[in-house]
Length: 556
Image 1: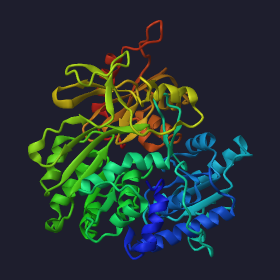
Image 2 (image 1 turned 45 degrees about the vertical axis):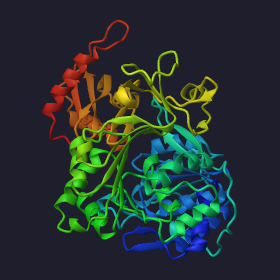
Image 3 (image 1 turned 90 degrees about the vertical axis):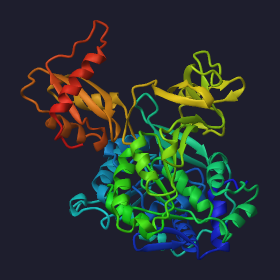
Image 4 (image 1 turned 180 degrees about the vertical axis):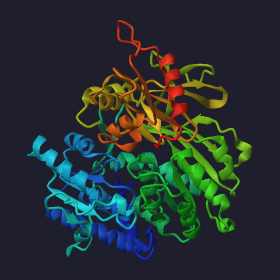
């Protein structure tokens, strides 16, 4: 069709420049201004040697600059690579070593981490270290305590304003279908990997979710797509992503909104303020919320229900992917009005695999139904989705990413060719019910999904074991009503009285992102392992639950 988002967005900007593309606080960007800012940033980056196939890392939370610079990358055919904005320097370095970015964009509140990351990559990969460092000032959205005091940033870093006000604008051109996007995931081993998407493949998979909810037949040409986006009769979509752009759902759905000429409302505060989100939803006439399950939807739905102006709510859709989204929270959202809730089972590696769609409280409890091109495979890779009562692993055989960057073996394992068709099998086990519905049984790996973030136990165990007092550790997830799962640990030390859970939590927080820190830690003198090194995990989790009850006041 139109191969790449940039080809469509620049045509919308040319034909309907006054339409509102982005809202970020007091700042509003028309499609014309959005396109011009991206064109200036692209010209600046090109002048600094960034071109097609070069990687640009985004160490940012949701800001207007994120989307503008993302668009700039698409114009250049450079490869955007969003990194988790909560990461510490060592974690940023690890992703840089995997993706070798030529430019890295960071926020001012992590200036010290960016500086430390720069120093480390100059040592570990001096020939491939990022050459361009760009700072986005986020002081207006974070507390003074979060801003570094007189801390030097990376050497030769430039403010983002220098890119957005650059004197030249990159000329419009047709961008190639095979231009790429990297989305980082940890897979199931704990080692980060970059999933490589082609922009054309991404557009192929997003066509249905972009147009069908609006009651519009998907276009077959660029001209037809532009016509839909600029048609006054096309329903105007106003999307507020309350999940971070570093996750595929928020980024992809925001792209879909711009594809139909809609407006993306950016909430730049990296911490959720439910009251502020509710106020923004009402003030901007938001029609679609992108959330991360109960962790976001529960407090926001409560804030909307309590808002005195709720009668003016225009919300008609809520989408979530990747974490627990309870029927209780869905019922509260349905109580706000005619809201369709789309709960998607997908992964960074591909999908969607299944969706639970409810349009009113009458549809609850929600049930997941297999998506088109999704299948259930038994242990011999035979399809069993037509056989109620069967269990198997979810797979998807539609448009897929190219695979993992520089990981051919893992790519073959995750994207096997079955009966001549390429599939993706991330590792989720389900039971097949009547009518094409499925019941999620669990993950085939030890990955902890907490608040929409993946945590790999081996990484947290390693951090705990670097403490001189700890000689054994095990990390796992326990059920959590709000987060889906919470990170928990049991550790062994010689003197269990000499070390507190809080000390170990602080120790981990110095090395890893805050969400990876165990919410509860049970301290023992010994972990009971078999001669083969195995643990009785049922017993271990009982110990952890007991510790959890004693640590209710421990901060996340």
